[in-house]
Structures are given as structure tokens and as C-alpha cells.
Image 1 (cartoon, rainbow, N blue to C red):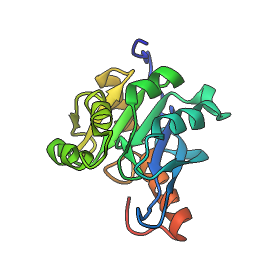
Image 2 (cartoon, rainbow, N blue to C red):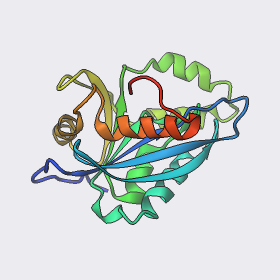
Image 3 (cartoon, helix red, strand yellow):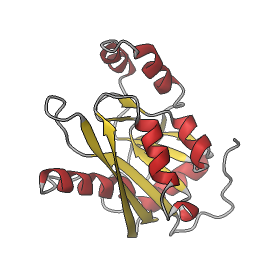
Image 4 (cartoon, rainbow, N blue to C red):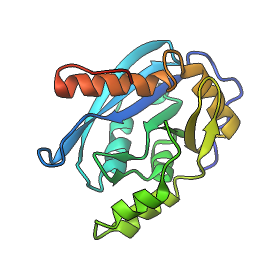
Length: 198
């Protein structure tokens, strides 16, 4: 599937931000996933939720199902993910999510990933090569400097458009509002109260 082209990127573009809730690998078999639907960086329009296995292999399928089953599907223009691993090392297949939802993906990262450390950690799993391959095909890591320095990976969207959408949706911290809000909701729902700044 070719990249989606944005002739005009509206300030109220519908973005789905996805993050996982806090969890303990010793206590939880599954982790709650929160999707926050935003109009640009201005207004929360909806929330969706699902579960994934801690250190499992179902993150891709669960994200695709959550998105495709949503009544908001027709309005969504971009999916933002807080990294590509959920519930520990449940690694999402970014190209597959784009192919099966038709919605471009922007992966948001606060720091440049330490790939050597990640690869070493993955080698604790019998299927580590499959998990590592999902990380390799997630795409090149790009640095974004405005409005704040973060790093992104993209699929199904041009880099220039992705950077503009990050800029539009970043208001109160260095990360875009859809991700920040998904993080706050996930923490609050799981622990009873969110702590600190997202």
C-alpha cells in the first residue's frame, strides 16, 4: 500500500494515540491498552481500549482489531504509537498495522532507541528473531526538533507530513497530545491515579 498523501493537514486532524498501562510482569498476564482519539492537539474526542499479553505476540492483531472495530475508523487519519513494544516485549508489526487498517503510523519515542540493548533483551525469548525482525522493519528513526526534540518512525506517510502532524498535535509537553493523554488515562485507570507528567 502506498503512502497516504495529505493535500492539506488540518489543525483538527483526527489522531489516535495508543499507549499501554502500568503493569507488573510478575503479577499480570495481560496489559490494558488505551487509545485516545484527538482532534489535532486540541480536543479529546473518544477513548478505546483493549488488552494484550505481557511479553506476548498479539500486539499487532489487537491494535488492528481495536482500530477496525471502532466507530471512529472512518474519521481517523493517523495512528500514533508510544514506541513499538507493549506489555514488555510484545512487539508490534508497524507495516502490517498500516496495511490492515489503511491508516498511516507515526511511532513516537522520547529518546533514540538503544538497539543493541533491545536485541540482547529479546534473546531471552525462543522466538527472538521474529520479534527482532519486527523492530528492523519498523523503519528508520528520524529526529524531530520542533516543537521539541523527539524521535519518530513512520509508515504509510511522508516524513514532511509526519513532522507537521507532530507539530500540530504537540501542545503541553514534548510529546503529542494523543500519546500524552493515552498515557495519563492508562495510568489512571490501572492504578487509580496518574502520577507525574506524561
